[in-house]
Image (tube, rainbow, N blue to C red; front, side, top):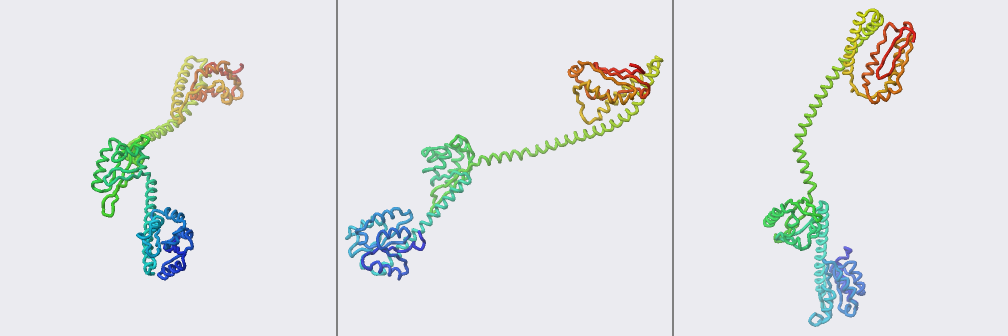
Amino acid sequence: MIPHLSERALILAPRGRDALLAEAILVEAGLRACVCATLATVVDELARGAGYGIVTEEALRTADLHPLVGLLESQPEWSDFPFILVTERGGGLERNPAASRYIAALGNVTFLERPFHPTTLISLAKSAIRGRRRQYEARSRLEALHKGEQRFRAAIDAVQGIPWTNNANGEMIGDQPGWSALTGQTFEEYQGFGWSSAVHPDDATPTIDAWRAAVAARRTFMFEHRVRRHDGEWRQYSVRAIPTCDADGNVREWVGVHTDVTSQRDTERALLDLTETLEQRIIAATADREVALAHLHEAQKLETIGQLTGGVAHDFNNLLTPITGTLDLMQYRFGQTDERTSRMITGALQSAERAKTLVQRLLGFARRQTLQTTAVDLGDLLEGMHDLITSSVGPTIEVRISQRSDLQPALERFPISLHHIRCWRSSLRIPVGSRGQGCGRWRSTGRGSCARRLCAGGP
């Protein structure tokens, strides 16, 4: 409806100058008016907007009223368009049988008999405008209520709430689509206090008692209980309801909402458990840290001892090497001629071997890496020692290394320690006096153990 047309008068008076006179009277009184030539024009202008209509009886007597009646019947609930029907003298209801027809067709009709004083027309026109304004106010209130309802439903949807209503006595009456969709209960099942059958048996009686106390005290109801959903799952719901009162302060109905708080309560319980166990977890973490620090200090001590042991072992090994070399030389020079000297040298060599074993153990302790046992191809190891032996015995000694063809499978079945082989390799003793003297042959044979022979000359 166009605002500036909402209070204008639609005038339909086809006889003589009646329409122009009526328009002049209204305009002089400060009222807006629009003259319509036909009833169809009245229908079109009424659809655009108007405050009331002034129609003469002769304009309706032979006209087709169906379009006008159809428009009036389709009015919104707040609208009841007023008409001022101008009749002939003696045209009242008691003397004009057609008047009842006009009332049935037009609805809100005020009769005005000719001749009439202009003041009477103006008074009826203003009365019609006041009635129309009240209708506009009703429309505004209905629109505000509709918007409020939409906001309320949007707010309920935003918090995932289920709205419901009860009568003044706290009984669920009437259709409750939200509650039915939540619980799966039928209309007959949730009427009165039947809704409580969807509440957990342990919560039903406390809920009803608290609800009745709130209804009796006419105060806001707040509660939490478990509700069985339509799929059979129990969920925790927060309930809140408030009374709505009429103008006299009497409770008209209760409006409430169920909000699912299951996830929120689960989170709160988990947080509470976390808070309760936080102190114990801190104590345990502190204890673990102390243990780790103790292990670290122990490891650092062992590392320091290992470094010190390694240094001592290397120094002792440097002293032991020339001793064992000298004993080898003496064994070579005098061991074959003097049996007593040979026994003494042999005993000294055995002591040197025990000392060397001790040194190797000290070096093994000083190593940072963990010793691992693994299978080694002894043939490849001997071949790799060729250059070491050659450089040790000098260019005048021929070095030959031979091994049995079936040696490798045996080693694979009986793994040996790399550490032991490296110790044996590093402890290889070549007589110090043999380097650069004469010629000879060094021969190493792999037969599960290593043998050596040094000749003064010849094969």
